[in-house]
Length: 119
Image (cartoon, rainbow, N blue to C red; front, side, top):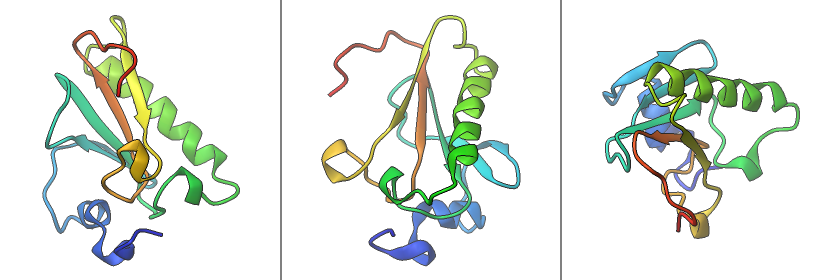
């Protein structure tokens, strides 16, 4: 669980529309929105609407949800015009990885060369 719990979670508040976001996709299970501190010309976050803090906290049986997120990342990359040139999908898990918001989220980054290693 998030250190602040689902009630105080920034991304849960975005899901509940308590905080504005530039939403680029929404269905019953997922929400995708523009990052407020983009690290690339294309920087979209994809989250499940249900709260769990990280990949380590993903419930058993969430394979379909996680797969749906990856397929949505591909669709958003294509919609944003980086499907052909290349994009990166990033999932940080835990403080040492750089995770700042403890609600699982996937970054879709593109629109410029992304170097390796990233850190």
